[in-house]
Image (cartoon, rainbow, N blue to C red; front, top):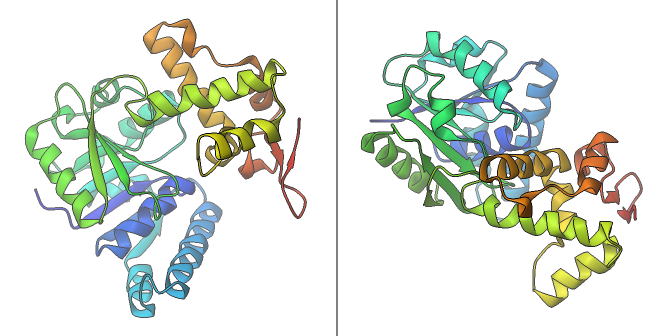
Length: 291
């Protein structure tokens, strides 16, 4: 299978990052979202991030110009039907993803590989809602996509070897490294990372330490580049909660029970950086802990 054109569903922080790296690697990209505003914001952000790479001598100005020229946008999901590879990067809700695939499938050419950037949801279950489970895989990029080197490749029960090999080669062309994960809730990275974040929230909830002391302890005591609560804000607390719910429901183990404080923050709409408040308040010049 040869991949030259890539369709990306969702222009949020993951979708625009994926578009960025594919365009820079020479692929023609078609990016879609439900609003023109989201697409315009994504293009502006990609432009700024590419310019940052130019200023740091990581890429040339000509490379940036060529990458931007390779990205097109559309509001019509059906327009992605003629691409060689489709990457769904919508919100981490299974019902939303299923609806997208059901709307898209009638427009796909027979050879198109269909993937999801889900960080936790069953690939086998998502694939079963399509007409091509053998050409369906989990294609999980890490955030921020232009910076992070890892891509998790997750096969569903029906995924064929040719599809896996094709995506493995695509990851290599992107200049990234792939890790093969089995189709279990949250795969590898989030199976380990999210319970750590959830435990940090429990540590805050139980009064063992405040936000600053918890984050400083893990940065200075475990050499983590970001504290777990700072990282949760960066990821999005709604995404963290969604993944913990998938772990709790899928593995039926109480050790994965989401912390009530995490649920409360999400209910308040304090989702982290993207809403201006989470475990830190980002509305001033510098972030300030909220607890």
